[in-house]
Image (cartoon, rainbow, N blue to C red; front, top):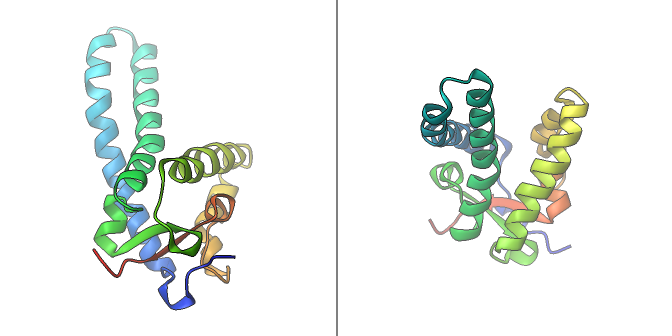
Length: 153
């Protein structure tokens, strides 16, 4: 299957730590992006709300994709807790694989189904590594990626 050795797989707690750090980074980035948009459309509350939603969506989908593709599988959160995302056989991330993991699997599939299930699938995705033999989330399975301990920071 091309899975990394079991002793290199990221522990669930480290993955959650990276996720929480990245959520803070994404919130800050979304705020920085949304503020100028809101200032432009400020007289209109509906337009301001749309600007905030668009900025948030761009950041949540774009930040991890760009980071994984340009830093060999590391977001800021993953770097800080010593993790990275790899492909089968430990191959480095590519733009295509990063987009498949973050935009298609995590954003579209997990996000859409998560919305339809009132967040249940999103929670399952986050918890999945607790019982998965290769510590993979559902979006990792779909993208054929693994989160591993980064031996070289």
